Structure formats: structure tokens, C-alpha cells
Image 1 (tube, helix red, strand yellow):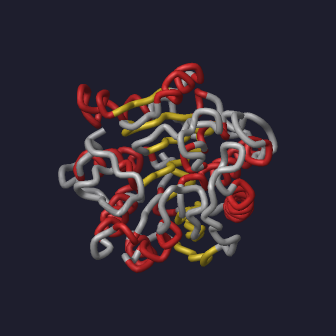
Image 2: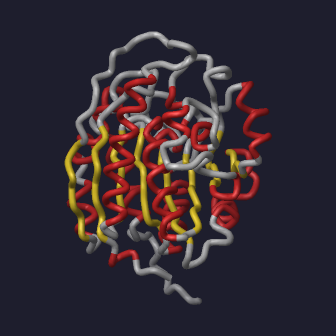
Length: 311
């Protein structure tokens, strides 16, 4: 097991909501900083570098063109995110992307996929989300690209996004597990089944429990695996985390979500992280940022465990 306490972290703010249907997630990075993400992680003994915010194009807030809203701006932001994250990986640091909406998953995971190919490491992505984000221009009812990043990573989408990792597709079904899913558009359901992605939806969690779900999602990891966590804050039930643009009832409660994060931390293998879709404009006194930070602390080893861990 890798000792996560020896990890060197780089916080990368990517303040945009160009891929979303609501304004406000561009303020997510600052909300996490206000909640004390740097100080909290340093208290866990981690070496934390705040790289500040990437600067990119403004949100034009326009209607879709050919099935995509703000495609030019989405591509620009994702290229910037890709380059910043890839640079930190090359330095041997663990990049933490502070989003921003989930369209940024294309740039983030493309950078990780590129790095893993070069290092000849296996990639496992845990996609913690209420949504599968497997829409395309033809399937999406809105044209919002934050509903399309997984499809793009699987080779379905605009060439500039599909090829961002240097090869297409950037991911295949063996590389990703989706957890907490409970809202899937009608056309998306058939498409995601065709792709063969392993989806641990909320019914699975209800029937088997979070512990069994995470054991299945984490099965097969080894020391040659790069574990990437893409944490959409709407993964959490809106009763505890209201500050997101697309709330969906029936998500994991506080303890279920914390157990999920603690079990990821127990592997010691997380090597990159996205935190996305936090929308302070829809929050109450920064509550959601504070809850999200609780979850991030658990990802980096803060544990409720008081009994002795017997192997």
C-alpha cells in the first residue's frame, strides 16, 4: 500500500461554468478555499501547493449550435485544464482540480490517461456522480456539455475533445466505475449499456450497501494502477449538499458518502482528483463546500476509525 501521507498535492482552480445549465460553478474553487481546503489538507500532513486559478474565456451564455452549447469555450477550458494537470503529474505531484462544471472531466482525465500511457500504468477512474454524463449532441436535451464528458472520453463527441489525450478513445469500459448514479436521460440509458460501463447506481447501493459497492468498484487495483477520482458534488444527497446546479434526490447520505471516501483512501492509490459542480450561488452559507471538504479530507486519510485495524 502507498502511504498517502507522502503525497505532494497541487490545487488547480478551473473557474468556469461554460458546460453547465446554471451559472455559479465558476465560483466553486473560491468556495473550497474559503472552506479551508489548503489548511485542512496541510493539517493531515500533506504538502499542498495552491497553483491558483487558470484564466480562460468568459461564459457567453448562448443557445446550442449543432447540439453543443459553448463548444469553443469548453474546448479552450479543457485544454487549459489538461495542460495544467499534466504538468503537475510530470512533476510527481497529485493534481486536485477545483472546478468548475463537470465538462472539465474531459481535460482532467485526458491528461491522466496520457500520463498513464507514458508511464505504462493501468488507469482506474471512479466517477462519483448522480449522472452518467454519457450524452451526445444527438441525445442531449439541452446541449450542455457537462452532460457529455464520459461519452467524449469514450470517443463520442467533437474531435477536439475526443482526441485531447492524444488517442481516441481515452477510456474503455475496463477503466471506469460509476457510483451513485440516479438520473439518466432516456437515450443515454441504451448508449451506456452498449458501452459496457459498470454502473453502481443507487439501487445497487440500496440493495448491497456502500461497503459491498466499493469493494466491487475497487476490485482488481494493484501497485501499477493509477486511481483517479472524479467527484461531482451532486453525488451527495441534496439534503446534505444543496449547492449544486442539478440536484437529484435519493443520493448517498453523509455516512454512506464518507464510507465511500474512506474506502478509497484505504487503498492508498488515489493519484489524481476532480472536485466539480459545486455552485455557491445555490448554496446556504457555504454549507455544501464544507461538506465537500469533509469528503475530501476522508479521501486523504481523515478517518472515523477508532478500532484497531487488524489485517
